[in-house]
Length: 309
Ligand code: C2E
Ligand code: MG
Ligand code: MG
Image 1 (cartoon, rainbow, N blue to C red):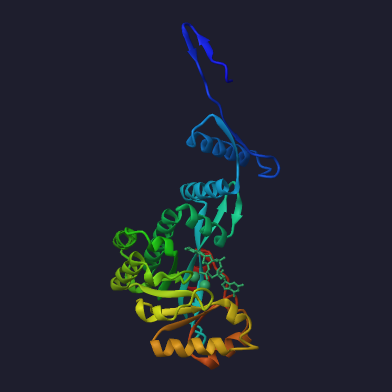
Image 2: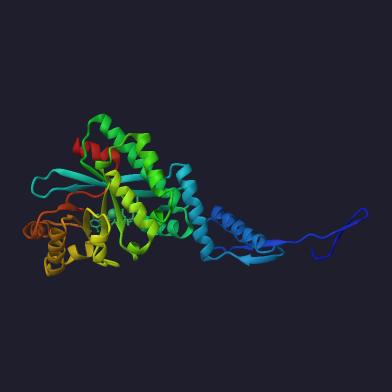
């Protein structure tokens, strides 16, 4: 291909850009292999052309990022809802919305996995808006059915909160679906020092002002700087499942979290409660709402309605 082509009086040079992907190491699916080869080729073109490049795992992330967007378009993503129960009364106090992705090309992908990739590739903004819109739509439908769920939680990635348009997007959707903010909880995970990021703090304050509650998810697991429980407008904490796993042998940290929550006037949700022993232990320590397989796994809209209407 290096030799120029002679066309009439002209001598024309063509360059070649090649993307390479390997069967079966990269994939054993023809569609994936085609997409991956293309992607590698686009990488060559972007970086000056006339070269070859092998497909790699960073590109894989990009592919997944792109497929999430496609997944939204083709309705492969949907929400399930896990009940949160008051252990004293057995009443449903709320539900947590959790996203699911049944991809045409990749099969069922676990949320932890694709949310991470969405965060790394920036797709999280589109995905996050989709999730908020789906949940608001659902709340609106439930309100019309007079199916009254006091609180609906939505997981929000800190990356979403770095976007200066985050709050105005939320506000637009609130108006579009006429959702009352006192029904909504945003759950954020404390995986890095969010209290020093001005954009995040501004967004959190605007959310709080609008009437939406903010809870810290997986509390105690990650970064856990206690200072920001006072600095940020936090209404509650969700105790991480790892503490529930050994609550029957050792409940010191859980007790400490209840004490902390009481003195800061925070609500407590205990997550990942799987059996009655754990529930009894919790009820002896203090009052909280319980979410876990003991009561229910995450349910489809239909299952939830059948169980609780
Ligand atoms: P998370 O927000 O802490 O959600 C709780 C996870 O624990 C859910 O897993 C739920 O199914 C699981 N779980 C609940 N009760 C039990 C139990 O009793 N035992 C056990 N073993 N597990 C229990 P899931 O749905 O796989 O979600 C995993 C994580 O993915 C979530 O953790 C959250 O960080 C993220 N995620 C899920 N949906 C969304 C979403 O819509 N938006 C964002 N940003 N993140 C999401
Ligand atoms: Mg959560
Ligand atoms: Mg959690």
